[in-house]
Length: 326
Ligand SMILES: NC(=O)c1ccc[n+]([C@@H]2O[C@H](COP(=O)([O-])OP(=O)(O)OC[C@H]3O[C@@H](n4cnc5c(N)ncnc54)[C@H](OP(=O)(O)O)[C@@H]3O)[C@@H](O)[C@H]2O)c1
Image (cartoon, rainbow, N blue to C red; front, side, top):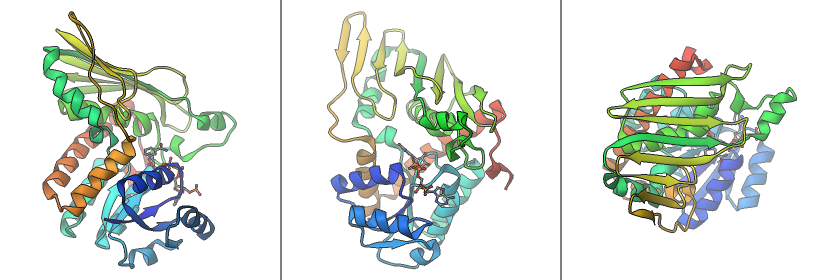
């Protein structure tokens, strides 16, 4: 796998650090301003940089594109890359809606290339640990996840400067930004809910700044709360009749996981050497280098379920992205 990175923001920097550990070769970087592309390339020792995306896609010294761009841009940039015969590692949230998702998947099949979401949750070793212990909880009755992360961009918003993550134009909001991890976790463990409702507090821009997603499953309820304008908990619990799995971190981190039963508390988490981006990249590299089509399809099926939940949740809360009207 030889990668070209799109964007030079926070997550592209994290990707570069992860690529060193995962021994993934980054061959090029794109930014719409040449000076920023050049500075990033120099800083990370990337041999080629571009401000012309079409020109970059003509090159054959890389086979995979990574979309470190604002949410609504994943789709158009991924589409061009797939049509150029490149694999795509797509950031979360995958894209803006199901229509875009299905189109991208069809294109990946048509061009016989990989399209894989950078899903950190299911790549974490402790996700597997939690899944393996679920049977010890008895019938599941409740799942609760809290993910509050006060955003400095909220201060900017209050001062009249609106970041792309707070706009419907760029498919922003707390569901796309934070709750997506919680949805991924819940859907990976329990599948799609039978019913859901999403209750939100919106900014004047129309996006959800704080929201609670209630998902009904046969026999239990999952309640996922996310917030970008409050300081609060980051934790999750899975409660069954015989015990609880408690985690004092969010699903994209999953450290310090305890199983609590009438017999006492047992630390079940394993030590994780790397962060979620690194574990994810190890897995992406394994899939692409080994041409593991089955694993790629399993990941796509999971991503589609997540996208279905995100779309239903937005519908429930009356959140419409510009991308929905295109
Ligand atoms: N930050 C995280 O921890 C994190 C974690 C996981 C996933 N993600 C996902 O990764 C993606 C990027 O997040 P980020 O935090 O890295 O964002 P970011 O820091 O805002 O960086 C986004 C990059 O896209 C560029 N960009 C902005 N508007 C553009 C446009 N209209 N056309 C082309 N390029 C444009 C930005 O350039 P300028 O800087 O010049 O505007 C920047 O290089 C998002 O989808 C996010 O959900 C982020």
